[in-house]
Length: 201
Image 1 (cartoon, one colour):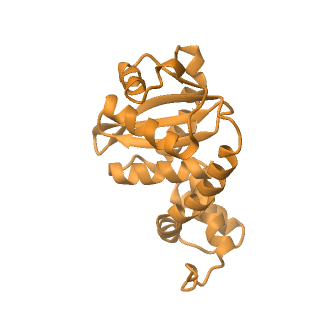
Image 2: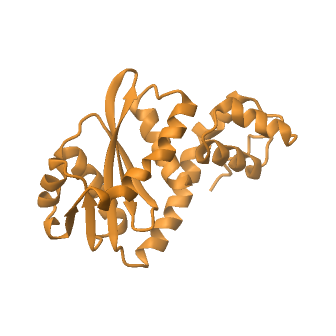
């Protein structure tokens, strides 16, 4: 396999550090530039942008592969599913997230609608990766019940307000990150960033 870093003057370690700083913490591109400058690393905010676009998905895929292999070795007790609205160019779309019983974010999916098809998309994606849990906790959105019925998992479905606090709390870091980025310009960018953040946090 060819070396993806061969045309870059900076070391792979520095590139990984820069990308993960931007992904893990609620920092703007210029914040990352300033923090690196304090540590003697002279990199512009445009370079930070280029690196996270170029290498973010690659780093996320590596982390996700290790995580899936690890989690498949242990029983999945309970998942928590939830959705929040996100504005993209003034239009509402929805970010769906699945969290395990320890608060680990398993998957994030962006959709234009908040319906059965969207809930089904999230469920199928996480079950393909991790198998089936013993129970799945959601809020009272009817789309979840319909999706559970579609995949034959109604016996595993739990509905309740406080039961799903773990999923709702998992959105808070994303909201802080969203403010630092000053919103998203497209659903594609939102999906890309959410997928990388899921792996990197």
